[in-house]
Image (cartoon, rainbow over all chains, first blue to last red; front, side, top):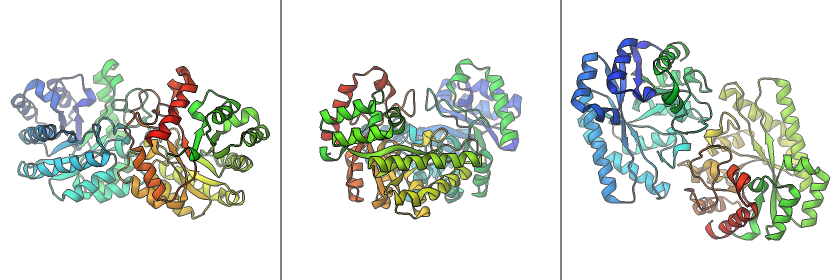
Length: 270
Length: 270
């Protein structure tokens, strides 16, 4: 894909600070970055805003709000509040999208938990619209349902967008989470202009860690070019994030080489 | 659930021979067993037929045929032949269902591989009907797509049944593989009388082995009673298999106690 749309999701190089990730983007002419909130908290919002502005970077998204379901009303309200703060942070950074990881059921039924996700997002849609930030519902791979997201397919995320019916609510299409679906192209087309992000990595069957065993672009079985074509045909032409969560690389790899490899493959493979 | 419908899928106690698994069923008044072909090969078909007949057991299914996709035509033909032998074995054992694990893409696109799955099943539907054996397409969890099955959702399995359009082709509903789907109840209803098997275990996020890290019934987050009610409402009233593939239990547990626990929970929890 074209360099002009490339964004580094900073968890690809998770051990690095925001300063170092921003510098790495500048060195490699990566024009955009996706910022995680733990890294943001490390430096503070004002400093983060200055860092990306001074480097001339766009911020493609902030990761993440969500985790809405809880059996306790007070805890649900607290999680909505936390996502409200994330909307403000995204707005301050000029990020068009706040990625939502919707959360596990926490001992409740999936049905109840999914209703709480819908309620949480609906409660925030107006504020997101006012802040010019889109809430991007990211369906996670079904293997993560017990720990990270009861929203487990693009079909379900699309259903939710349709139910809520706000232009401030869209979906984030991450190939790692959705490629397995025989209906993925149809669901991408259905998502259309509600697509608020497109994330790349690759799939080899996870061995140790379902969250952070993602493969380098072009080394797995995901049909990346075909999915990129579907996303473009659906009308999405904004930043494309390389988001390769890989605990082994974080622990052992030369992260400069890891990132060089990712950029090279993004340009050549997708 | 009722004891009269209980079937032991013998991989719940994988280290055991068919003889020992049959004896364990008799000891516990389990009226049915699901036979795996490697265990069948260990004793030979004639001996296996005698074993289950003399024990007075039903055979709920034979596991497994399938693995259809391959880039080579000769290999595809060989896999169809192998599944043909499995149909004969199921018929000899009086099993109403041959479970199909459809296979990974093997370096091909998912689209091509899925077409080869459809071709393989269609090639065998007539012979299956003549042998009074149903081909039960078992969608596997999407995390197994690269190694075991390009058919990754009940929706997709239902689509395939509809496309092939033979009463000898149905679906196998295994809770471990399908529970995550927000549309699972609707897809079970859609499957209706094409349901050719119902398998129970439970879900805790796999830690080491996506295939054999299944949880004991009632210790995970699957809504087993609700799914059992959906399957019954769809019209399935045949045997229900406990199929708890768990490598740790195979290696370390007292398998008699493991099976006692599974039976107790089947009777009490589901």
